[in-house]
Length: 110
Image 1 (cartoon, rainbow, N blue to C red):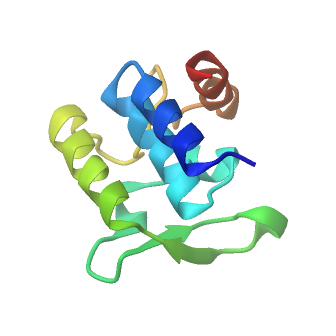
Image 2: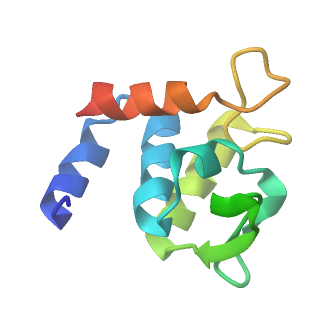
């Protein structure tokens, strides 16, 4: 279990906004790696401050919270990267980021 200070240091160590946004969503919303990489733009509901998770654990859909600070980071990320369908598109631009890539980001930042 990471302390608040550990999480803050982790987020500060992220080398770019994309990686910081991914890690922020994981920690602030309690998302699994497989869930965060499959987020679509339409899954973010800033009016209700919720994130719609499709096919989470047990292949069930659910809602989770969207923290104020995470929303601020998401807005900066969106203005910078302008993703179209997937919040975190893969290298080819057609699919989403691979879960192993997200795991690698975490371990590199650690």
